[in-house]
Length: 459
Image (cartoon, rainbow, N blue to C red; front, side):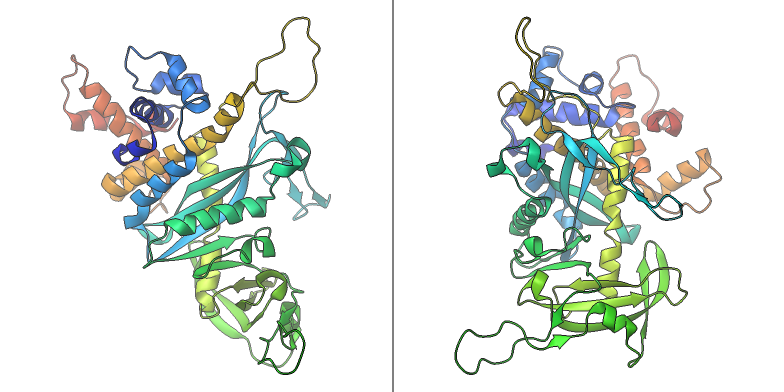
């Protein structure tokens, strides 16, 4: 399955890549590189230092590997390729690791809901990664699917990097979306979904023609009619008369709400909507957008507004695609809990010699520390992509559900395999193959697969 990726490496580096992918998948517990190497199927003549040098010195590009993964997933993607953009924090500590800084920690912060202390943001030290993932529909659950990260960029704080090389998270996301759009075949289209941080002019105005963006709109957005035909002298107008803002659309008494049934977060719910096509010049420039405001008829959720840069897109598609943005959050959780995303501590510089004066802050030795940091997290997501692709090709969803119910009979509502079930199936296959290759093994493959317990493989 990994053979199409061989063109991204030299032959020795590809052997190391294949060995490390296997070791990363089989590794249980903390995914430091020494534990990953223990599970890697390396030739006996190879030294373990060659696997460490794969991240710091080998010549390969994570973007080239991402392009190869995208070509492998392309047969499973629909006509409209849905991309999701977001960022995640991998916590790290230490004075000499490359690229760490203090970032807002969304997982630990308190947003003031259900508490009496109010909003309380928390910052943590680590690496902040901007991620662009592709939604892959699953044969057993095409409504939800799974988000597979493709492109990643390390966001560096303005205080900890050269001002000439500083880029905002939205700028990094725009660069990756432009690269992803260049991979899309001519007969397909690209739709990008992002949260409020990425629904801004830095990203939306840089989208090429044919790329749609869907995101939340602020309630006080300044909306306008399209500019009419140019008449007279002087500079032509770029926008027409002022239209009601989303907040005014929610508050106005005239006009009836339209009821809409949508499938979001695995449930079919009813919402009341109002919509209009307008110019949101602040964000999208002269590009027409469709603005949809929603209201929960039961009053459980606050009123919200969404927009799409494709004015012909129905409101149901706008709401359902935006709800699928949460798949990337699930991917971050699975990658951190089951594949040890952010566990490796490579990328450290060596300490000063005895008797030399020390200074605070990271001091990478050459580019080895930075190369190791910039490649390790994309490599971990390559292991994630390998698990999903293998399961899409040969996995059996009914068998995974049956095994899960046997080991956890209280999960009666489980109807589809999760990423954990995919990972257990891949590990069972790899361990069965290794045990069958042992000269003293005489049990058949079906018997070996039966006796390998799921809780042990998932630990």
